[in-house]
Image: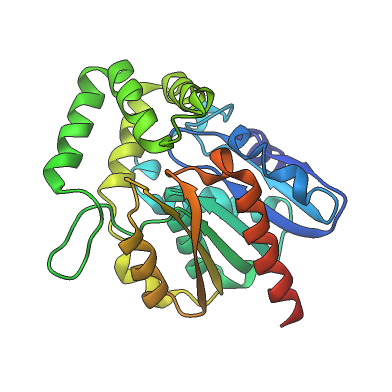
Length: 271
């Protein structure tokens, strides 16, 4: 069973330390997106990378539309990996939707997690006036998903630069677009709907694991208001507003991302 889970999620484990740090990729991505960040943690940590079922080099035969049409299905992937590798006191680092997936995992099994590091997180992408700014009107999301279903390649070429936002690093936008295009469009559509229509604001008060929120500047997917909202509703959270622009600071600004994570984990160590 353990072997099956590790194959299913294409799990990679390396590093010279014993403290586990698990990196979870965002929608349309895979574990390779963490390659600019992980070398900085190799010496001191046990690094765990993986691909959600339906992403990267995961075992597509393990895919279930029923399981993965809910973020709790992805959270189960994380819990399965922790169980298979016998991980406890995990430092969880999640990008974008994986931040919420990590939150759901920690609610279900708080004993497995020591810290949550939430990179460009959002508990709800749709505006809910007057008190919540998610960044999108519901119609915007519906139009985007409609384009996705009708013209997947066109959708990928439109969305990748919006998400990455760093015009001076066009190779990153190209990589993100290629990553979108390498994902099965049907599975990507299910993940996109699950991601963009999710509303996990009511789950935030249930979180007991301390967290770091890394909020980017000029992030059109998760605006600054979202970071402040999370900070207000997540007990034991620390909010850091980054100089990094866009939605993928671990790719576009890895140095700043590394520094803020290390600073937070060092302070946590002292406490």
